[in-house]
Image (tube, rainbow, N blue to C red; front, side, top):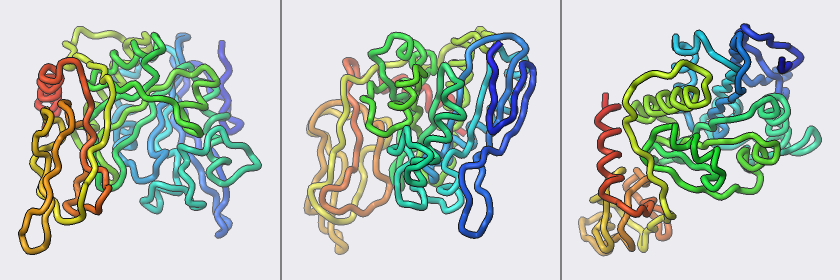
Length: 333
């Protein structure tokens, strides 16, 4: 039987516990703790972690975990689920992406107990949580004023990770290279397979993204044999993007968006108009290639060079767009 000990507390098979994992102290002499929820089944099985708010302004994942751990589906869990709804507690408190030392926590792994504050928190998460786990799902959103269609990013060249990504059940899969200092890179070095779920925007709850995230995690748990399989129909056939790129503003001004998240676009299609405060349109933003819009800026103001549309390229754009519409209809409020 695998022994799981977090913050000096042992969690036995068949137990569920909530733990406050100390990460540091504030200069006010108050402790900052990372909230952890652990549920261990009575029967052996894989260990999977869920992490949210590594970027403190990315809130959808918090709500996904809140809803998931209350579900009856977990009652007869096999193996262990470790859920961390707020990894970057500092960022959540301040509604900011970064740590107090202005570092990106997701570029600070593996860290150490002698490095920067971000590196120390990264090291605590890696050694206290990730080291116990066979698999992980890291929950993210777009950054400030940007939104993403529900999508999975992962090392799809690894066969097992690819199967997990397909099992999640959203239409768009991106083969994403490992970035230096990221949780995915550090986890890969310990042998933990990771999916990164991107959906919605910062500082907002997006109901479609939350529902798709909860459903996707349940799909992965079923795929791993951790919860009972059901006969529910798969709602989204996944498609792997060949690659993707951002379309950037070629001028500064006020934006009128012509295309929206999830839209299929063809080469040279008009995506947006950029104009001045007096109503004059002086630049058109067009698509360079045919693809699907998987991310877009939401604020109607741009500076020259701002990333406006994230477009992914597939073998069959029309079929992907159709499956995205099915997903949007299913999870619409």
